[in-house]
Image 1 (spheres, rainbow, N blue to C red):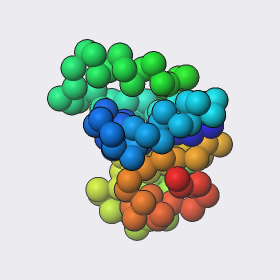
Image 2 (image 1 turned 90 degrees about the horizontal axis):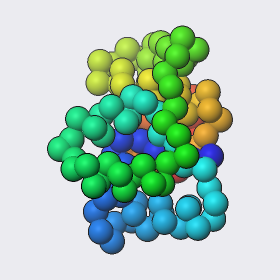
Image 3 (image 1 turned 90 degrees about the vertical axis):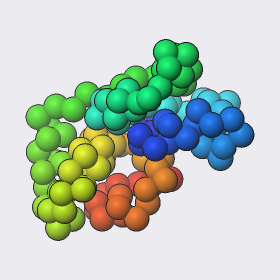
Image 4 (image 1 turned 60 degrees about the vertical axis):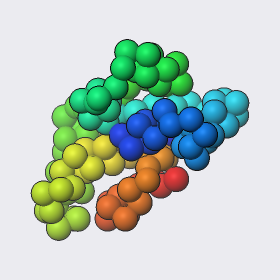
Length: 121
């Protein structure tokens, strides 16, 4: 299972981008593609068109919820990463990927490396 970060969702809409190529390749390999509800929220903040939203949804098996368990893990990850305000949402996305036992596809490797237990692509 591969969990897509917000920037991956956005960049995969760019024709010919590396993210778009990987998304198509993963789909052909029958990878299960998901995204955290937090990343989906950020993506929907846009600007994105209804066609772009529909296009991304065709690739997604599901949008993963952010529950009490993810909140607990995100709080711990946030603390371990030094409580840097800019990492709050990233901690939520990381916690969702960890809980789902999914690798996280992101272009924000530097920030997500701060979260132990996260498998990055």
